[in-house]
Length: 396
Image (cartoon, rainbow, N blue to C red):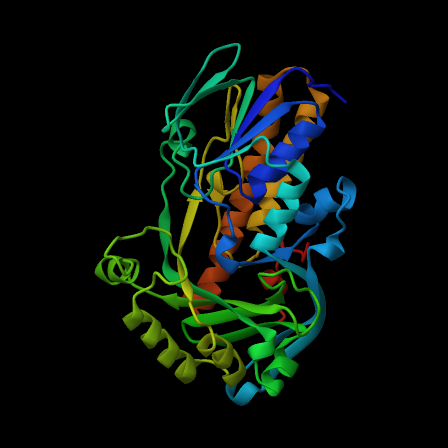
């Protein structure tokens, strides 16, 4: 394995993909610093993550923390219809975590000494010997390797792939979580051990339990997490929905407490009309739902010289395969392997890029097809192998 001791790496973006990358680069010997634009600790707004092997690999192979300490599980996949009728059910063991729980675990392994909040990377230049990253604060950092893992809204994607633009998918995801302890006994019994889907014409909801914000992992102490996808026309309709209570428009997401009350009230009324009663109960018991507009974006380049794009900064697929964090982790591990096998950074990135571009494009196309079946064509068939979760479409 190539030893990169004495070399410096800067990772822009302190989310799950960025931290996984930083940990793996440090494992190779790099002196690594992470710069996150958010000025306060990240909390993930309570979102859930389906754990695939790529996502868990750091904890399986490298960490003193074990997967069981950062996740919970279910045993079944089911579809609910009118009156909570179980339309389809199959054994399907899955593990889940909350974004906050997983991020805290990665940050505990990395440490805070070289993790910097409130630093927005505004641009960079590079020469044959290194890269200079400029921050909006006036800070400048020079490194031998720079990885941009700064999410779907990456400002630096345009420097590598200027033609890549966010493309609205035609629908949004209402998100929320409710403590299992707040659910009625019947709803808890029906939902607690399954990934549950509720599908109706032009809409669908996946739902599953995740660790509570306090880290509760035991059955009954977790939170029920969901995303409810609803079609919203681009233009005026989407623009109004994505304008927060202060009158400030957002492109991608509105955090808990920011969605206008009139839209929350309409969403709750629609839940009673459209969704299975148990699923509607979870939606109605959500105190502060939040909102994410669904976009596709795919870069045509992920590397130039000593600079790499990784995770959602490179390509972001619709959430239907539940594999965004898995792709970011796969990008990070592949980068680790390329650098471990090559003594030249630019050659390592050039060798790494083609396979990761292909991986991102495959996931994008599969996620688009899944979304079309669910939200547009209404041809989604429970149990269809084309609908499987996972980075590769085989449930893995």
